[in-house]
Length: 230
Image 1 (tube, rainbow, N blue to C red):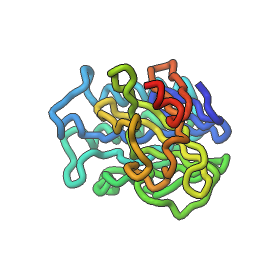
Image 2: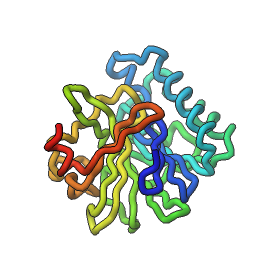
Image 3: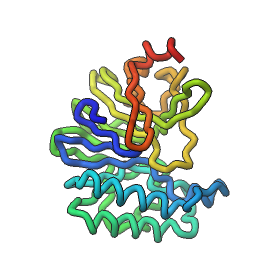
């Protein structure tokens, strides 16, 4: 599905005009930290999904939009290997790799060779940031992670993206769900702007949830309208 020039692929975003794929919140090492594992393991799950998406989209740029790591003060076994394999998967594609720092990534510079940035401007002018602090860059649209949005529908919790218009300074903000499938997510059903984790989001009522269901994301009306239907 494409919304405002952004195509949702798995839990990543493909910005069509910039030919860029954006992935946020891998939280590598969360399986070790929480003692909860995916059926195929964190490494194989993330690498397999990323490789499939790269083959599907064939982007010119891949942006890892922060919180590659889960732990602040240690690197669990296997995380360094997974990061290296992510780099190799991207290098096998035609894409250039851009790495952004998130609030969890205090040890990231010791693990990756690529330059680590706080923000990256895409070819269409969209600015990608992690979303945990107010950016110094200006743009008509920002793409962020950090929030891990999810929505509850008929008692079930689903990860979702948020396509938000008229946010801080009139900007549009596109919020990605966490790429890791271990993240429980922050429910947006009754979340107010003051409770948002990102300073970029000032009017959550103007955010349209896009539920991530593999290859068939479902787009809903803005939360102001949609909440009355839940």
